[in-house]
Length: 239
Image 1: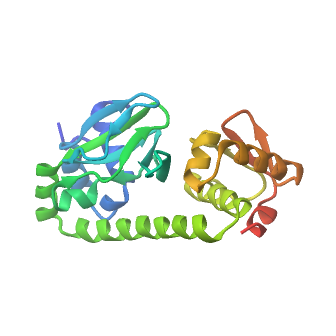
Image 2 (image 1 turned 45 degrees about the vertical axis):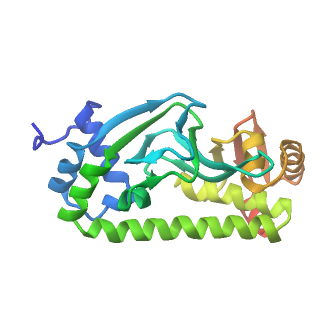
């Protein structure tokens, strides 16, 4: 039953509740309201590298990352991929287009095997009528996303490579919600090539600069995806 207490057992209802509770735009809703949302959720799974949607596709649902991560990107006139956002557990996408049905102006792909909770536009419209406070949370969420895009534009136009890399690593530290005391181990969702795509440089440059930061004792590289922040103070001094 929808009003039964969720025991966190991993069933469909419990997973949907966990997904709804951790997304920012639903953070002001109470227990019963969350349960209503759970009953609207559909689950979608994507394999690593699989396209979630493409630029030009009709945006007809809200996507909430339950587990995993995705990249949101566009292609430049030269055909190079430019990553706009990297989204992980609890992040949502598609809110703006749900307010006015439209086409996606970017593409998205899974960076690893990723599970989404989705809500259709029709169901989302009913939620907004019933709980208008969600609209304010959407505006706040979109503001944060625009602010991040503005930071990206500024980084690409005015900052050197070391500063861009430091900013990128600190962004993932912030998103990881780990204790910032001592060493911090990051499981990067991006390859070296994707890191370059994100901050406007090449894979070779990323690899060379990371190696230099390792020699300086700022980070330690462990495999292709793991980066350990050894000296947070020095990393911030690169900004």
